[in-house]
Amino acid sequence: DADVTQTPRNRITKTGKRIMLECSQTKGHDRMYWYRQDPGLGLRLIYYSFDVKDINKGEISDGYSVSRQAQAKFSLSLESAIPNQTALYFCATSDPQGREQFFGPGTRLTVL
Amino acid sequence: AQSVSQHNHHVILSEAASLELGCNYSYGGTVNLFWYVQYPGQHLQLLLKYFSGDPLVKGIKGFEAEFIKSKFSFNLRKPSVQWSDTAEYFCAVKGAGAGSYQLTFGKGTKLSVIP
Image (tube, rainbow over all chains, first blue to last red; front, top):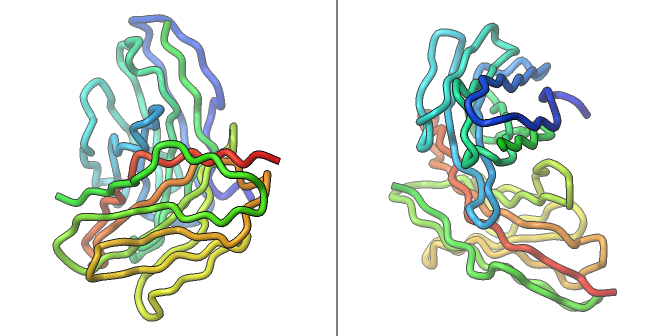
């Protein structure tokens, strides 16, 4: 089931490069989220958006920015990538009551 | 601030052994609780969830979890594990109110099942 899709699935880039990760959903949800997963640390929230005009920082937003181009699209940008941003990035959406989150397949990002 | 503690970093079991993974949370109010599973190389999948009602929740693939409010716990159980259960398991908590959005994850428990 591909309700939440992410592109690219894997990306290798160099320090200082700008990179964008994209997320699309067909669930019709207003709420969307970006997380990063690091070994032994679980998932941590980077940014979240409750609708196109409502974007908020999560617990680890430094070095990241986001864009909510439409209800279905939520992009995460690294303006100048650094090696400690090497991680697995997940996009998620949640139902209108915000009770359950649905995750995309993840993007594995490596910054050299 | 809400937090989740998973007691074990890595659990190794033989097939057919019983499983219990511990999860304790900290939150000053009514909660929604979740267990997610991540198979090697795959994305997060919801195993089960608790919103309200019966504190014993049954999920997919024979997993269940029990919410014990007095202990702030939501432990995951399975009576007999299989090799295919090898994965990483994440407990997560969220406030139950409509304005609560933050889903806080534990650091995960890796389960290795030996055939």
